[in-house]
Structures are given as C-alpha cells and as structure tokens.
Image (cartoon, rainbow, N blue to C red; front, side, top):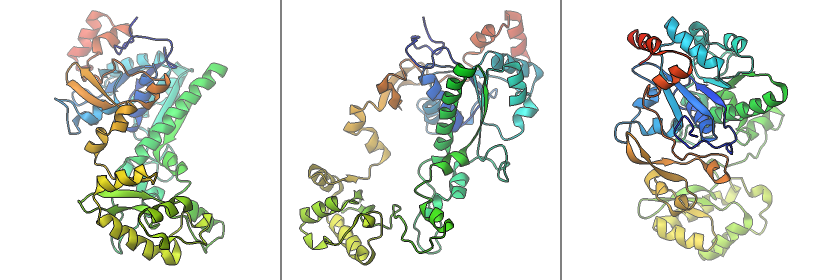
Length: 411
C-alpha cells in the first residue's frame, strides 16, 4: 500500500490515517502541515489558481522551483482552487467534510467571506480540528495587523534587547522567530487536540497567534521587565545579548569570527590559564556573576578577548580551544554549516531525487531519528499536480471535473 504522497504507507507513523486540509501560505502554516505530513498524515494543500502559494516565487530556486517552498511543503498534494467561485467553495467544503484537521492563515474575516469559516466547517464536521494561524490572534487591538515576522518580533520586546550604538536601530533578525514560534504552537495544539478527540470525540477551534506564541517563549527576554513590574527597579539584569564580554562574538585575524561561551567560573578559569592569563581570574566570583556584565572587570575582559582573537585565525583557534574542552566555536556561514561533519553525522541534510528539480538537498526532519517521522519519498508538489486524483476522491465524475476545469475553478 502507498501513501497518497508517494511514500510507502506504514501504520507505525503516529498520524497514519489523519487527513489534513492546508489552506495556509508562506511559512507558519505550511511548516506545521509539513510536520504533520512527515508524521504520516495525508495533507492536501489548497492554493490559488495560476499563482499558488507566494512561497513558490521566493528565490533562490533549485532547477525551477523555490528552495523555500520545497523546504516547507514536502509530502503534500496540491489542488489549485478558486475559493471565490461557488463551485470552488463546494469543493473546499467536501474536503472539509472528510478532514480531521484544517489549517488556515488568512487575515481575520477572510474565511467568513469565503464560506469556510470555523463555525460553518465545524457544523458540517463536528470532529474537525480547525486551526487558524494569524499574526496577532482573532481578537485584541492588534488583531487586524498583518502577521509579518519582523513586526511581531519588534512588538514582542525581543528586538529591544539588541545592543546598538546610540541612534542606531536594532538590526533585522536573521531568524524568523515569530513564524516558527507560531508554527510550533500550532503543531503542539493540533497534536493535543487530536489526543483529546480520541478521549471525547469532539473537535476543536484553535486560535493560534504568532505574537502570543513568540511572547510565551520570551521568559529570559522578559526577566528584567517582569522584575521591574514587580517593583525591583535596581537590577542587576541578566545579560545574554552581547553586553556580557564572556558571552559574545569576536572578530578573528582572517576576517572571521568566533562565538565565546565562557559563562561558568570553572570554564573561564580554564580558558585564562590556557592562554597564559591567570591574572584575569577573580577569586571572589560567584554564580550571580554568570550572566552579568562583570562590572568593573568588563572592559578588561572584553579588551583581552578582542586582542586575543584578533591575533588568531578562526578555524585554527576554535579547533585548538575545542580540543581543550573550551566552548568557543567558529561563526559559520550557511554554506559552511551545511557541509559540517556534525550535520552529516546527525543526518540533518538529506538528498532526494525530485521528479522536476532533479537531485536536491534539503533539511531533514530531526524526528526521523526517533521513528516518529519519515520523509522518504516525500517531495513538494507542483501547483495543482493532484487535481484529478483529489477531485475523484471527493466524488466528482469525469464530466464534472472537466466542467470545473473549463470554468477555471481548478487549474
């Protein structure tokens, strides 16, 4: 027996037999749905005719298809469907009738206009787990704001931790923390709702906010603000954003950089002795100094570390220090990280033979090592590639399918 995506079907995967309809686009919803597919679910991705998910158009490409799109849509089947047409809405409702999970990431109110909102969907299918992913949630003063990662990180307080020169704004983050926070919360909520449905038989409506999800992960970021809110206005505050000279990055002689993690007293003492600077060891250091600026010693520590690494080449010094059990690592480029021996040892990059893109590398699912996910044979779909099979499964005969194509409802 074969999974609809092309992978050999196996009941060993935890979500075997679960059917998901994915109306989402770009990153949070598609990544969440991909994780469900990796764990055995059958996922139908519903896309806009002709254009598809905007992620399809994000460069760079493999041969013709977006690397980004392929990274968050493997294991799905694609149906290009005009939801604004009454016939398209009927196709969508048939999909919903047979689904266990629905994921959507439209702005608030759009699903109501399209006739696929949670209230209507759950009347038709009471066991449905309906997951809405938006930037700021379905209510609250920010609910109408589009959910772009940058503005969510900015509003959350996360970007406010970055040290910057006076007058300079924080830099744009290099990681889509809000997108992945929302995706992870959605995945967790869907799995929990499926488990509860086994116990009660009831579906669920899940209002997943990227902002809520990211904010809930900012326990460390918010320590100072929480302390001040409780009446502690004196500090000191935790320092893990560059102001601690022993937890920072430093330039090397060859134009590279290293990440320095010398937080613990024992590790710092080991490093100081290793470089012949035992005079930097403070006999009165306590555990409270671990995540501090180190007060009066800060400038000396920073100048010493700056000078030391400026006299060394990145890879040579990192290798020497790591061999001595001192946690200082090179700051790698994406290309360097992709080919690192540890990546290969952990199986974090897999090469697949894609029917349209050729032989391509992609980032693997780390749960594959646990047996809870299996990405073998899973590829990202071409736009509308599974139209005929999906429509036939929904009960549309040959003439009906031809009529839908003729009207442009499906492409």
